[in-house]
Image (cartoon, rainbow, N blue to C red; front, side, top):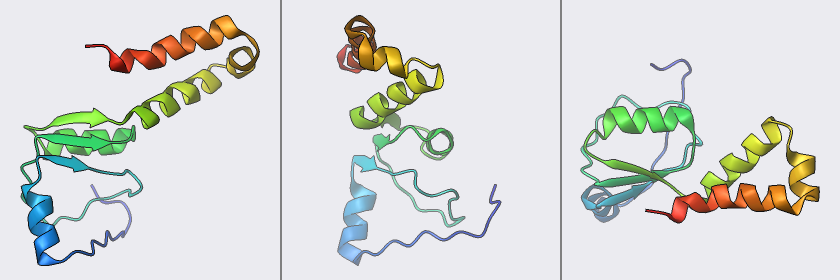
Length: 112
């Protein structure tokens, strides 16, 4: 659903577009709020983006067969924002045990 008039500009040569559409992995940034109604066939196996909830929803709807993956930087950023949201910032900065526990949570991204 488009709620505002927004445009996404993509500057690329024909060769670059062929490379993009033929890629197995696509990286996205959620700095946009809408998506154009133009359909582009992309058959990426993996879509990597930040932790933008709206973008994750769109990826799930538009790239049905693809696996969504988020980058580690944005994951740790989301964890730290949650630490701030629940009021643990002071404890995180002053108590090494709490900081260590929170960093263990961030390290979960490396487990299989």
